[in-house]
Image (cartoon, rainbow, N blue to C red; front, side, top):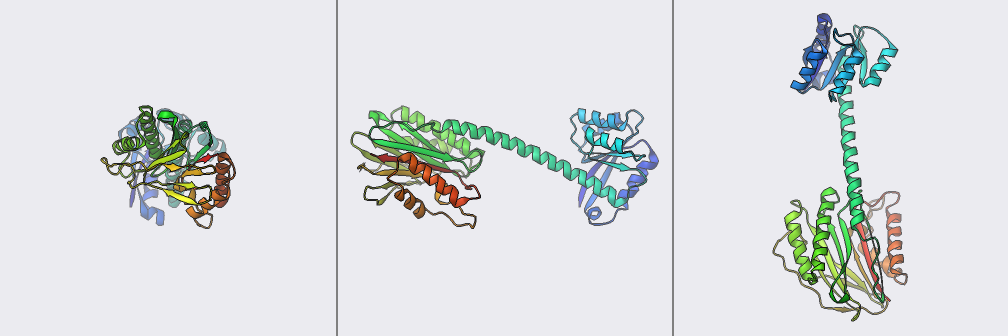
Length: 382
């Protein structure tokens, strides 16, 4: 049984007693589940003191107090920052007064001597529930605004354009499932003119994931500027995630390094593999043994042996939000299907491969949006 605190602002003893009688004699499911504890005040001045002193769920307000009118009382209660729902309780049936009360912020309008027990209980509960709904919507609005701002920040942190590298085409794209997400990709300037490619997927796709992603990006970029090899960059990234991520959060990641002179690819992974589509249209899995970032602070990482990139080779790094995308009938798109679509489109430019895959991703999910963050990077050897 729920106990609700009712502030009854009523200077007439007879009407106050009437309210007590109506509430104690009410019948029905609502009355059986809810009990109202009445806190009575006879003036607006004393009622403001009650509101400061204890939590109140709903206010039943007499429209003819000695120190204020009903509308004046509503305005002054709200001017004090009170968000408790107010029901105006009046002696007269006056549509204009009812309209003024609602405009001033009252939830409802009841006429004394014409309201039944069940009507009073229902009106009080409805006012409480409606105010809770308004508060929830306001909170959701604040969350959406925060997500929108975080999404704008994340979009700013992602690459705005692909770098130029002689003999290669490069393209990438990230789409969060929510306004802000936890998928990340980046391009890195490595020593001797090498190109670094980072891609990662933070567990979850809420604000905490976005914050982890932003911290990871900063760590990886800083290490790259210090000319650290990619296995050392991954090691420092792991330390950063272990220190900063919320408990239970982890990151799967891959760092790749392309040598445009020797036309080779090396990589290091942490629970996140990549793929190389050869000129013969075969798919090579690119993976090194290591667990995701954030699970073990002392984890070692090793860089692969260099792989030759011949003309027509396509390096692909993508997050699981793409191949785990669901159709309206809850059919997963599947990694095999995704790779087959990339293979079918491999003769296009890197940008066309990325654009086509996201178009087909949206088609697979339509009319819904994909429910996980999705990121893709494609590097094609010309």
